[in-house]
Amino acid sequence: MSEDASSPKPPLTRRELKERERQRATERPESADSSPIATSKPPRSTSPAQEKLPALAPTAAPKAVPVSSPVTKPSAGRRVLSWGTIIATGLLFVGVSLPVNVFYGSSDINPAIVLEGENGEGSSGAQSFTVASSQAIQVGVQRESWSVTSFAEVLRAQYGSRNFSYSTSGIGSIRWPFPTAVPISSGYGDRVAPCRYCSSNHRGLDFIPGNGSPIFAIADGVVTASEYGGGYGQYAYIEHEINGQTVLSVYAHMQRNSSPLQVGDSIRAGDFIGLVGNTGISTGPHLHFEIRIEGEYVNPFTWLKANAF
Image (cartoon, rainbow, N blue to C red; front, side):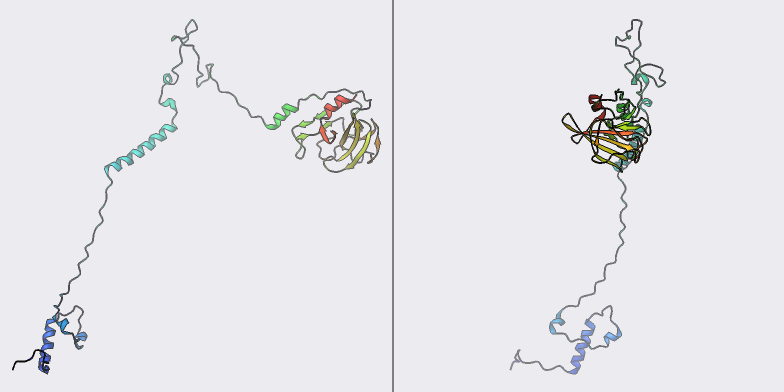
């Protein structure tokens, strides 16, 4: 009777198991890190499928080969370009630092100079001329002289030479603030400021008859201000009605307490106003005199010459 293939196999004996384990030990390759401690452990049980797989031999790691970086040498074009840049820089420095006459002769620089003949014409038929040499011994193109004029000098030249001459009779309904003609140091308008806090736009007329000279009213009117203080020092305002207009006359820089006027006083032409002084912002004894018509400043010199006797 034949044996069935599907019948179970009889169990292996102890001897057969030892033979099989010895066979497995000889077939399995030793690992690189095997040690006596590791071999003393019992072998792991493997399945029949794993036993059929062939053992793979260990592969050694490839050795690292040092690679040296290649040394790149500059190309011939780059070397030529570098030297060309250096030479061009030197030539540029020479070109901008040396004068032009180093590279050209006098005949090249002045090609139009011709010799003058006996008949007054050049040998080439062109009109002759001469060019100034470096020694400046010839007449021709010459360097112009320059000067700087300050703004103060401009104002002094424009306003410092004005004519302030006038004459007065000392009588009449409208008169000058002094019975005789006196010098005038500063006129109306732009000027060179005589001090740090003085104005460069002068709105009055400065009379200089001398310190302590008496000042008189120019016309009939009423006192609207008489006090001491500010840039005017001792000053007085008198309001007049002249030719249908409201005219205000101003008297400033008088000696302190030299004016007897009080606000509201009625004044007649020629009445005493005060004494010439140096109070307020002033550089010397003088009378600062103003004329304002309807609140607007006008030139006192022009107005007095047109209206006063």
